[in-house]
Length: 499
Image 1 (cartoon, rainbow, N blue to C red):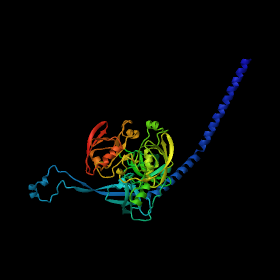
Image 2 (image 1 turned 45 degrees about the vertical axis):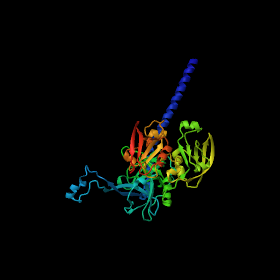
Image 3 (image 1 turned 45 degrees about the horizontal axis):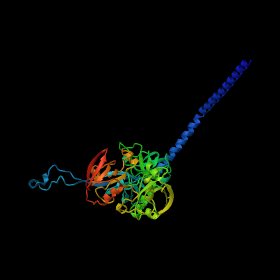
Image 4 (image 1 turned 30 degrees about the horizontal axis):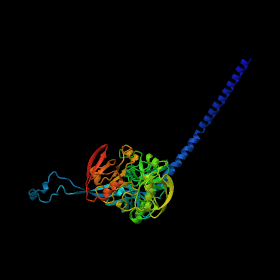
């Protein structure tokens, strides 16, 4: 009897489960049917939303595009064609041919033209662009979106950020309003506007891929916005705008193996570009803040040694006598954790924040000193004009000689794990590495390239930036340099003659 009860009970449970499953399946089928029946309405709403988005994007483009101009530059290049022998210098032959024939070794001139972009930032004709767009040019012409063209005057340029300012004599121009690059977020929608390959008023769309990109090797002061909006040759100096049509960056460079767009572009943030522009207009130069310290990255070993909780911050490796840092009490071995209330991500971040601080500003600096945190106040001074005035003690853990000599146009930095990885070196490597070589420099002509490690200069070992600066301080404009470099594991000597 018990056996029969268990049988009927089991049968009842199975039956109940079957009814429940059937009801669930039926409900799902009804729901699916309902959604299917209403699919026409959903599709209609989607189309309407997309149409509204398209209209909004077109409105932004219509407002911003007239503010981006085409810049064409011209410069005269002198070339000397070497003759295989001095035929025209032979007095006997010249007696017959006379002087009507030009000597083959006589310098010949030709005009070199290049194209770029710029952004109107004021109604009276101020234009922001890249330094490399107008560098060494004898003539600058600007073509507006309404086809009117003007000759432009160079107001000032700053190679350290690759920003330049030019001006045309006009009024009532469609100036683009500045946006706040500090508020940009990864994934935010942006537009790049410029003149790629001479195609005027070209707009591309993408997102913010990253912010605060440094150690790229494009400029001395780097805080780049990275975007996947298509940027190509001719886009340099153009506008990067947000969805509100505000200028948030100046398009500067791309990472490419083909020379064209490959999904990685860089723009100087509007905050930095605007500060440089205002300084060039007001002072005819860039006035930068100065703390007066040498700094290096916090590695895992150094963090453990100095008691840092993580790898953020900047380790003070030297302090200049009489500098704002020394006066405030900053010492060698301190780790700068926060500057003026903002967390210091790395050395590049600190350098940028200090450089953009107005001279005379009193800022708070949070330090890790003897494994204990403390806060002090520092009055920021102006960055000395000559590197020799602050040898071994400025925030720039890179160097580019201010005075012309054989090493002019060469930018080097102390090796960090990130730089070692970038140039294919072992992460434990130390010393100095070349991160940038100006194409027109003597160093470039001698064969120096980014990624070369500097071992010796004039047969003197070079291990630190202090060693490098001392060599520069003793170098005269006409001195030539004998350098020992290491490239792909092999050592070689290179002689650099000043141009």
